[in-house]
Image (cartoon, rainbow, N blue to C red; front, top):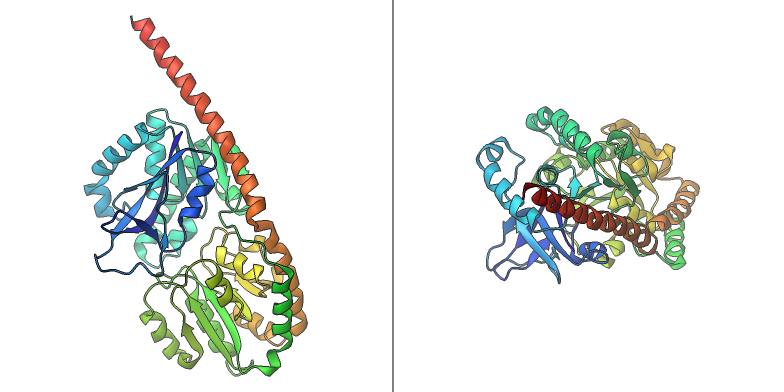
Length: 412
């Protein structure tokens, strides 16, 4: 069985035909589906790399039994008018050659494949990984705010019609985008290798040695593009507590241009306290980076269930986050602040930075909570869901075939 999967993710490809991801969709993600389906067609946006470009910092997304179909973006008004016909033709051909469709939502391409799948009677499922409203409203421009209500209602309508819906949160996305008549699954798209007890032991030793080190290290993982990760909120909060807590360093791990944030750091007199660490390969390199962080912060404006926060928790990091998306499902209430509230975030930083007892309790609590997202547990849950969808799709196709044959005999 061939399944078509679609999302607005941008893949990078070169002349050899290999596709790369900025880190979120390496080949191992497709293996989750290939444990149930035979082959996949991945639909997404694409950006061709120059012939001499070094793909370092990106992860290989290509692999056996996975083909890619590159589509132009439909996220701006001009492309919606000039390229929608082309996209419709290409997606229609691909969907007709597939047995089932999976749309990762919210996304423009996901919405299109659902529309076409319903038109031609193809079985489809949705993966709800974020909130359309939050993502657009907090994107940072007027166009996003104007389009937010339309995207919200469109996504809500499409999810409501889905026969199968997988959510990455326990309750947040289910409440905003319910699927009342479909089979519903809950499984984070984040999976981690369960950490050994020695990781927690090293973390506790690090907490106990804070007085012996020159600087307290705050850490945040998130793209420097856009404003959804709340990097500005973190900087403003740190400016408020500078001089009130021990000397600190704020390290940011993520892709994108540093220029805007370096300018803000200068305006806030934080130039010497902010460090941009660029991009690291997913896996051990990121975990090693987290082991050098004393307090992880996720002051996002929009999230599904943030991988970075779960990874930080798996390394025993005490953490503070906003109430965006599924973050409240991960952290205690006292560790949360409303998105954009740099004043409350600063108060939390000031209260917790010198509190060894709090840090130890959060390290132990977060380490234990992260075990719920171990690969072994999630693989089993995810495979059972997609196996049910495959069986449904096979029955759907068979019933559709019989219906068409019956119609043909009646016309004869």
